[in-house]
Image 1 (spheres, rainbow, N blue to C red):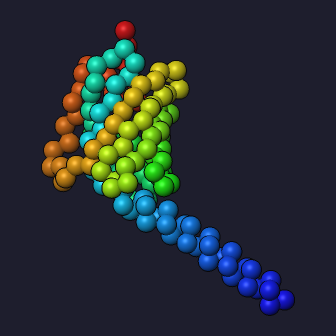
Image 2 (image 1 turned 90 degrees about the horizontal axis):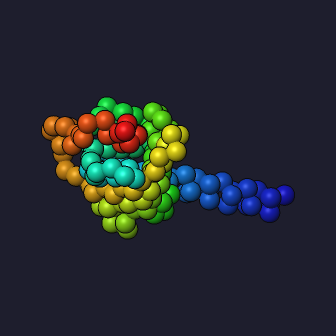
Image 3 (image 1 turned 90 degrees about the vertical axis):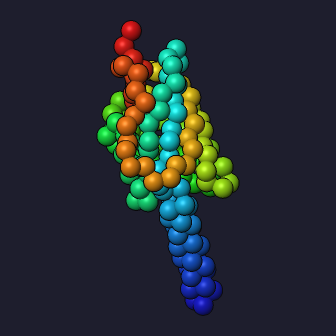
Amino acid sequence: MKKVWSTLLIVGITVMLLFSSCSLLMRLIAGEWTMYFTWSGSSESSTVWTLNADGTFEDSYTLAGTWESSWNSFKLVYDTYEATYIGTVTANNTYMSGTMSNNLSQSGTWYAERTGIVTSLVPNAIEGLSPVRAPSK
């Protein structure tokens, strides 16, 4: 019986450490990031992501969704068009990059750099272009 309790204690501590390390990682990545994106066949544009430690975000277009990170991987999903950004984060948590796609079968590439405190969140918009979809042709 003592062995069972020891095993359960070790499993419990391991699970607790796993969740606390994910939470710590989320807090390390949380903050403002300037994200540059290019949908296939379109010009580069940018937005500012405000990543909250609770796994939610909003960008400078006022679009929102959820995000998560584990080790050096990163995933962000917009509520609109289910645009999904998947990539990797550098060890010092100052740069990330990857690919993106949405439920309109559009895809592209992106990268983001950690920014300081931004007082004006004005997107660098090209008419019809947004972080969730390419412009209509």
